[in-house]
Image (cartoon, rainbow, N blue to C red):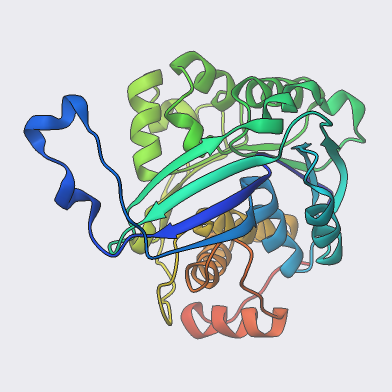
Length: 313
């Protein structure tokens, strides 16, 4: 299956704070918050939603294509992606911008405060599916909001099956922008908090989404995920972790595992279980692309938690 993953391409600056953010939030002072957190460590990692998803697909034996925009500092990152099996031919480098940057601070409870600098990502709206060979499946993950709406419209126009994954852009996008991406998407995927934002901003219920979509996938962190279909709900538990290191990229890893199932014609439950295994590997490492595994090891972990893995192809 030919899969194109769209979304942010970024460098992640990951910091850890040895306390709890909520200890410093004063309920009667929320109208003028002014906080600074002294962190214990910082690491610079390759990141962005599209590479995170694509990397996990590549680990699982697929050959995903990333469509997106990066900056003048992307050469080494491109070479690395190609080296791990990700096709970067649809990534356009913008000569007068830096690659997007994600600054994320995580506390002892895995709560996060983050800031994202768009940089070259703001030019993603210049790319079009009219200029690419028709893929079998597209994922529209967090990106320039205008680009996300445009890609969804083009997928509907061109008859391309697509997953709409608004993620962090749920906070910034208007209700109308979210509707333009969601309505008609084959699959909507988001976490439980994001779906409440979607519901509030758009007025769309689960039934409204499913009136035109195959599935609504809601991830719930340590509580696993739910695949909501028109006739039933499939709950998938999280896979127990050996250790918790960093939640950055865990959701993207889930999406990579889920898409692996779709690419191989698996049923919905198997897709969710593949996502759950992939997510736990990411949780056990810093950043979204520092974990690795063989298919044999991945399959063994799947079967230790869910029983025999059988996929049509």
